Image 1 (cartoon, rainbow, N blue to C red):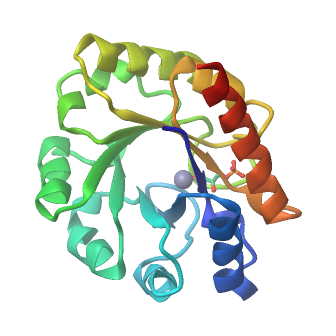
Image 2 (cartoon, rainbow, N blue to C red):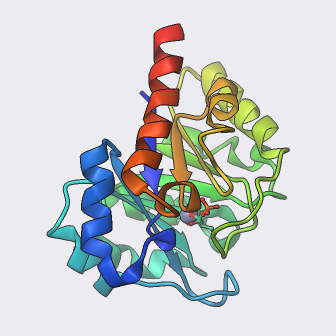
Length: 222
Ligand code: DX5
Ligand code: ZN
């Protein structure tokens, strides 16, 4: 099942409620929430209070991408703010297995993100525990960056790893995703696409529909 996860980072922060409801009405299923700590990544974005205040105005699945050192410290707080899924970076967790289990024990879906230079082989042991893998197709920290083409090959390799093990792991791609490269990402095995600029810059409802048209064309072919 193909899903679009608009990234709030690219929205107009003066009118978040309206923007979130626009993408929901247009047919997006996830809302991708980028939490940045200024340590794991250079920038600082938003945290629990923003997530919590948006929770009451939408039924979208809250997909919280933690670009934070040792995110295990915040799982209960992020859950209380309204997360459905928490994604942590492999590079930010010394005890990744413990952190993933904390997320699952909290009753949330667990995902692990890999920076562009981190090989997918690092997931060999943890893959069966994960609901989703996030392949970063930019170096995390900012919206509006250019897609790194070798991410496509990483998606293919994670899909093959999951298939070999009989797993139906969701594979998400984040960074520089557009309606133009969506088809190639789906073909490589991705099924959850994050898009910030490509959704919120311009007419957000029309932009969501462009992605959904690509999804529909793909599903009709499959
Ligand atoms: C980048 C964030 C992304 C960002 C994507 O570090 O993880 O979610 O919002 O933005 P675009 O789609 O503009 O590359
Ligand atoms: Zn993100």
